[in-house]
Image (tube, rainbow, N blue to C red; front, side, top):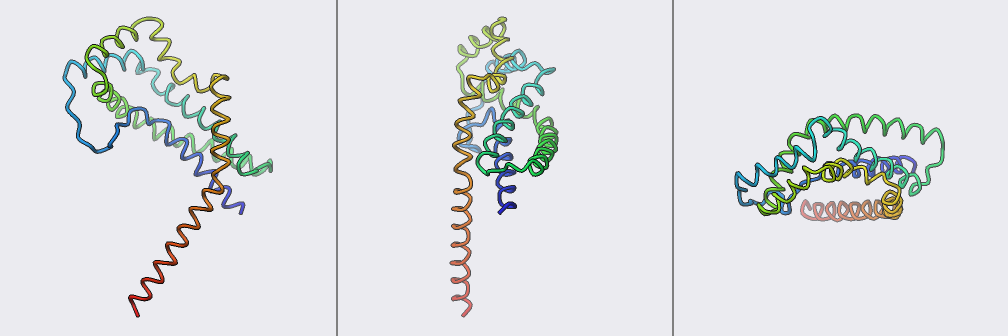
Length: 200
């Protein structure tokens, strides 16, 4: 049972980290989209360079990952009833190692994420909207808005609301995992029976 709890805890943290860099996913995934104009791409690039300066991009992405991990850890500890100090210490060390490795992976993907964001902005907004956004980002308020875009995750008003949401979601995880295990077991049993009937 403890092994299952640790596995679920790890899966929950992995799930949380997997959402962190997903800033510019387009609906449809591999669906073909119209090629944005050069003017729109240029404006989108200016917005990204102003809003996510190259020298602070890693810090912005990593701050979001850190905060999501903190909240997922708290929700998972409550959901799985882990209160043994030694076990928590092991999990915390594992978490530190996992975050370190995840940040290395994320670091290598930041350039492609920025390129994807550029193309997404160019696809999502009209030329005039991009001009308006570009004008806003160039102001001190616009700079401040983008600078604090990830920090809002840790601001108490949002963090408390988000923690309550994550606590409820994580509380459902053990039952959901048991349901998944049951479904997989039923599928495999039915598959074995079908294959046995075909073989005979």
